[in-house]
Length: 95
Image (cartoon, rainbow, N blue to C red; front, side):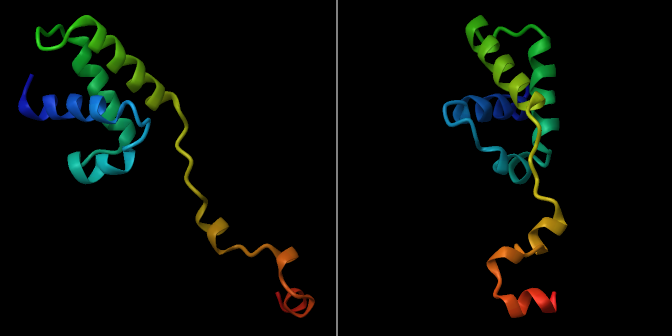
C-alpha cells in the first residue's frame, strides 16, 4: 500500500466512529466523497498484509454505506426561496 493509500484508509478509520468527516475529503485528498470511498473499496479488493480481516470488513462496511447513501444537497433555488407564510401581508402582495 502506498503512503497515499494508507492515508485514505487511516482517514476512514479515524472518522468511522463519528460517521462524518466527508467535508474534509475534498480538501485533503482532492476527491469527492463518493469517489474517495469507491477508491478505498478498490484498495480493499486487493489482498494486503497491512490490514487484518476485521479491519478490512469494517472498512468495506463503512465505504459501502457511504457510497450507497444519497448525498443531500440543497437545491440552489431553495436557498433563495422565501416562505411566504412567515412574511407580513404587505410583503406577500409584493412578491
